[in-house]
Each structure stands twice: as C-alpha cells, then as structure tokens.
Length: 301
Ligand SMILES: [Zn+2]
Image 1: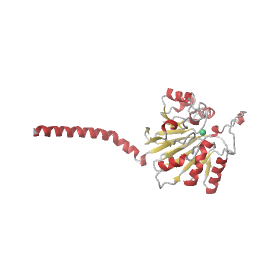
Image 2 (image 1 turned 135 degrees about the vertical axis):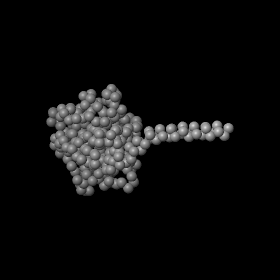
Image 3 (image 1 turned 90 degrees about the horizontal axis):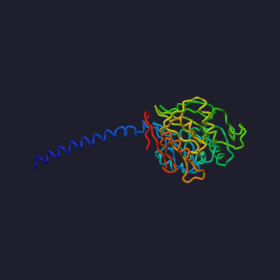
Image 4 (image 1 turned 120 degrees about the vertical axis):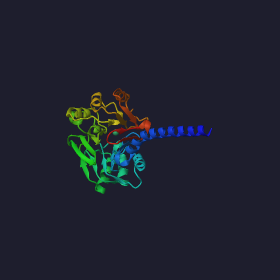
C-alpha cells in the first residue's frame, strides 16, 4: 500500500515537472519580451472620435502623436506612464483639426514636452491658436516636417517621415485648393511616418486620404509595415486597395468614437482590411489598443 502510494507520488511529481516545464517554456519568451528595456509599445488610446497614440521606446522615451478631441488623453497618459514620468520627449501634431489637437493643450500644461513636430499648416480655431500660444510661452522647440527625412530617435528606433514632401507652413487649406477644388482639406496635410524598431515597422497615417496615398505610391518608397495606423478613422476616403497591397500590414488600428456621426469606420474599409487578411483593432469597440514589438516580432492582443 505504502509502495503504491510512493509510486503514485513519483508519477505525479514527474507529470508536474513536465507540465510546469512546458508552460514555462511558453511563458519565458513572453516575460523576456515584456521586459521594458526590450519592448517598444504603441498605445492607440480610446479618446472618442479623434486620434491620440502614445509610443514608448525600450529606453522609456515617449512620442505622443495627436491628442484627441477632449481631455481624455490626460487620464490615458496618467495610466500608461509611471507616476513620476512627466516628460513627453516628442509631440507630433499630424494636422491642426480639433479631433487631433484639442487634447494636446492639456498635455502641454501638465507635461514637460521637449520637442514638437508639425507641418506648419494652420487653422483659425481657438483651440489650435491656444496650442500655438502654449508652445510659444513654454519655448518648446518646433520642427517643421516639409520633406522626406529620417530621424534616429532612440537606440534602435527610427522615424522615417514620408509626407508632407513639400512646404506647408502657413497653409490653411492644403493642396486641394491648388487643384481647383472648393473643399478645404487639411486631412491631406497630415504627417505620415514610419516608425521602425529592429525588424518591425509601424506606419502612422494621420487623417491622410487617397490623394496622399497615391503620392506615396508614386514616390516608390517602400511602404511595407507590420502595423498600420489606419488613415482618417477608417473613413472610405482612405486605405485604398492599391495602398493596402503596398503596405501589406499584419495588424491595423482604427481610432474612432462609439456611434460617431461620421459613420467611421466605413464598412468598405473594414471589408478591404478583412480581404487583405489584416487583423484590425478598433478603439470604439475595444477601448485602448496596446501593440508591442520586441524588435523581432509584433506582440498583439
Ligand atoms: Zn481626424
């Protein structure tokens, strides 16, 4: 009886070792990948109908791309960053529309923003003017994106600016007017850039629409990335078939508000993403989206 019990215990011990060993094997790379010094994190915040995305590099540097239509970004930053972290190393305003710039005003007040990239395109809205005023008051250096350029942002992390490829400083209504169209379209002044970390790549589209996509395609630049931040909240005016083919992302994020008035994201955009086998995440249905990279591969939910 005692012998049988010992035999059973021994068997159990072997089984436990195998099971624990196996799960550790599965778990160990995750732990390694999640060690902050190796991981770059992109957070597409759920801020309602607008855009606000935070990138944290493996060394802890931060890039905030747009701020959304309200102050929700403050709460999201508070949760995403350690309580002692009050620096935003780089703030990028893709274009001056209120659903991108509004939240940035509060960020300028509460955080130590070290540098700002924008296009120089302007808007007469009071919130955009307040944003400019705050920057002037705080004497934050501003860099105008007006041509293709590559910036080594942090160790292993590069920013490759693809658009605008021409001067937009002072422009209020973009290139559309030059083409004889009546409609003002600041969307197509959006900064478009690639972020690379190791072998992984992200593409941030702002609210750029098909005309910008066509310019990018015609320029012959390599657009392939792993993660696409979909242009213009998933509107049907962005993310064309040809563009998706060239970008061929594995994952996409769509920033939009629950039951928004614009019908974003458009069903046709969602269908296109599906047809190309892209796993698309939406802030309106899924809340904050967190996508990570360990430099070799993307770690998505
Ligand atoms: Zn927008």
